[in-house]
Length: 280
RNA sequence: AUAGUGGGUCU
Image 1 (cartoon, rainbow, N blue to C red):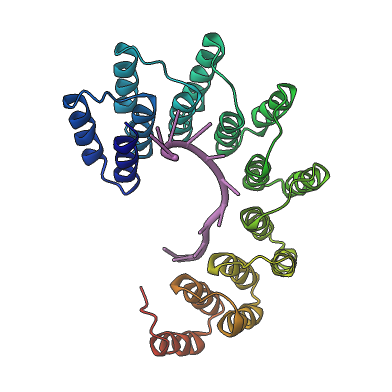
Image 2 (image 1 turned 60 degrees about the vertical axis):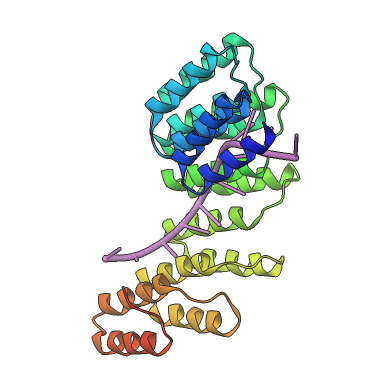
């Protein structure tokens, strides 16, 4: 079973769901019957492919065969519903878990909180955040980052930074994802200078921001009309940072065009060609 | 030994 499960998961992750199902059939013919892990992996693949109906059918099938979905199986389905914008259905599954006495763990709460954050229902997200702690679960960096991003999308930058502080108080360290979320939040709120400070801080504490993080900040400056600073950051990237990507150049092009600096925009286009970047 | 969760950029 382990061999098959590993293979099935591998195929699913690389986007070949049908091969995953073919292997499941092979297992059945070999009398190596699929277990909860097999089903969970396939259900997850279907969910990521937005085939929730199929995922639910598979859940029914595993139940019919006498297998009990566990916390991972349920969380997988909940995540699928959340990513499909159906937090309501996700909560129904959660109620089902409560009724059946299925273990409620950290990942489950992270998934639910993320679901509510994505639909900008921070009230519910908060409620779950509190609930998980009442159940003795310690929020981890994913929980906090999820909330930071949730507040950011809701336009509440202050709350996002309150979370950052709480995180520090709880002894949970920021990682590069958390930093990027904060940078993104600051840019969205028009606080580009703060965003740049975060970028610097991130590097000071030993993380390597990638091109996307830089590009967000560059875009922030460009949108403020400060294309110069954008270019300064570009030079910095070219010197010692991550390779600027096509989007980085597009951001700067856009900045120049918005200012009517078409000559410079043209120069930049030529520069892109010289650097071997193919404009899209 | 195998399954579930967070940020990521322009138009």
